[in-house]
Length: 216
Image 1 (cartoon, one colour):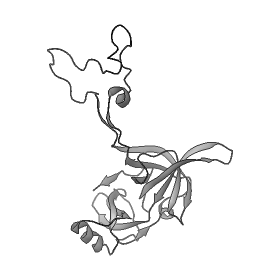
Image 2 (cartoon, rainbow, N blue to C red):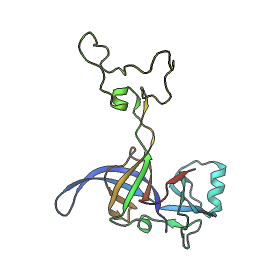
Image 3 (tube, rainbow, N blue to C red):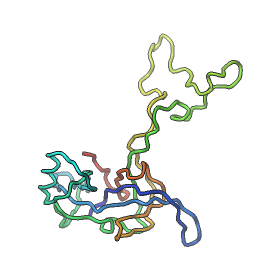
Image 4 (cartoon, rainbow, N blue to C red):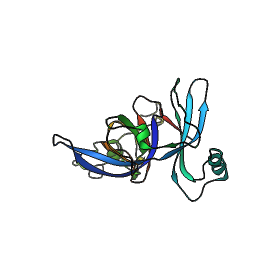
């Protein structure tokens, strides 16, 4: 029906399998989400989900949510392409989607989030450069990037050169994850593996093989 869900990261821990193997896990609060918009386009079907609560939203968002028959001030709104021939069944605006309606134990998933911001970083930390030698009078070049260009030709630094700059705070998708537990009472799911972002950060959880979520 719906291959995706919105959630927030609660924390990271560890768990043990039946044969005693220790695995890293992430606990995610997934849903409940509400359907705020359904579009039947010629080439695909699109659905918009809302998640979370907030005190203040814009007038446009308030009218959009009210049109779906909801009174909750939703914090996050994200749209998904179901598939070119997707079938949403009886899903319509105002429908509540819970974690057990979308995922099951053993599902292969991918999780998209915003990675932790690490501020301004040098090339050694940001790109894994080796730095320069410590000897031969180069004590001040240990973590320097080295040469960044040529001479008269081309007479400039190429766009996209790996240099120092702001690190983190980017949209990251972690693949190869797996659902190991679901708790419908608390709307939480336990995922085998680690997901990007800080605690309470927004996560887009999708079944593998489905279309990427489009951010509004």
